[in-house]
Length: 356
Ligand SMILES: *Cc1c(COP(=O)(O)O)cnc(C)c1O
Image (tube, rainbow, N blue to C red):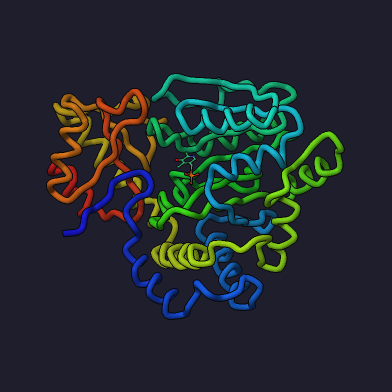
């Protein structure tokens, strides 16, 4: 029997993954040159599908990296000369901040306890911060920052850039890319693909900044995949180095499948499943919802406090062919995390709740 994965990444494969993988094998995509027209067509197709699915305008280029955490470094190198500002409320947002410190940036930090979220009104951005780094979905704690708060934060700091980590929620958040300068995700989360591809969306303002920083003698934007090089290649639908052609192809095909269902329908299904899960937790004696404020509750990664040790619950659920994640860090033994990605159907979620 095959397991159903409710883990936050790597996660359940999207139902059409196998079919598209077989096509990729039949077409020998593992062997094609990344300087061929065939590859340029694949890159272009994936970009077009993502633009449609996530409403990404032509002002933004779409680039590929090895993983999302690589993109943290790219953004800090290419868009920050001296100062960055980080909203931190869990392990992933903390790491983004730590990358900035490692890169010798002056990194400002607004930190909240695990499980709490940020609202626009309480965030004061330091005067000289060049980039605001927000994590739309903090995977470790199951906390989201609402799109409207992200947009307001940027609108009231229009001269600064805003970078949005949407790694474990894309394509769910309806980000307004007329205000979001850069955002990124990786494919092993809500797109239901194997790990190994990060996707970086960045606008011309990020490019202009990188080009300016590149000219400074005492500053480096990095040798590997800096934004001006990525952009120059992207204009021809090429990549600076040999890319993960297979995953770029598969991402385009999954995005096409989601477009056929319709972005709004996919979004609504995710909302409906999230409501089901949260309602179950509220009504249960064995669990309760970790994140107290509804507006901060992630729609795609749901964290529950457990009465029993989480290892027992995880083992019990596994016997029924379902895999849920443990809590993160210090919450490993007292929490479970349930991913709510498009790859798992309402029926599969119902089956999980029954066992829980
Ligand atoms: C998983 C995750 C990352 C890191 O992604 P990788 O592909 O493992 O580099 C970054 N941010 C968030 C919020 C994540 O969930």
